[in-house]
Length: 282
Image (cartoon, rainbow, N blue to C red; front, side, top):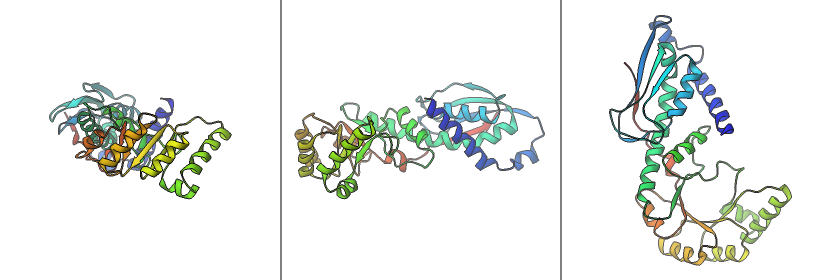
């Protein structure tokens, strides 16, 4: 939580600096100095709201004297016409924060809305949906937070919190057995305790992993449904299983019905549609 707060503060400062430069000259030129007012965060389409707490942090960074009245929380389902919160105080401060609040909340709400739809589709299975590292640079922590708000599960955050041996690692290492053996030796030498996952591309590679062991999860990449079912049956609960590759909303249930523990979907973050929101003067 402390790391998240630090990332959020850094993000807000950098984003405001990018937008503000040496001043909001439009507002400075048109709004009388010291004038106060009120605005509302208006929801313009149905979905799941996310980023309310982030918006509060943005507004407080811009002006700690702003007053907020929040009526809808992160993770709540919303419909067009709902008002998430009111903010009152310096009009200049409200306008300074407006675009960053909207850009962040719209993006996060779009991700949370999409994730919630997937979670609902999978509700009668034991399969959970994972995000990926296919995220917007410097916004990953917010996008992954939005996935959690929508009911999904975060995969690794970056390159540092999990060993994920993918096809290129296997090929460069000289094969699956060598890659797993090297990973285990590395963790022992560095005295690190992080999960190990390995990607397999076919059933023979899966058999090699089952023989070698030493992993926490097996990633079954780009398997057709028949082969995926065979793979899950072969693993038989010895390791957690994850399916990836071309999984979208239209086919996610079919993948889940193959029996995997997880499906990973880059589409949760790399091509999601933002939820339409607006900050309007009251």
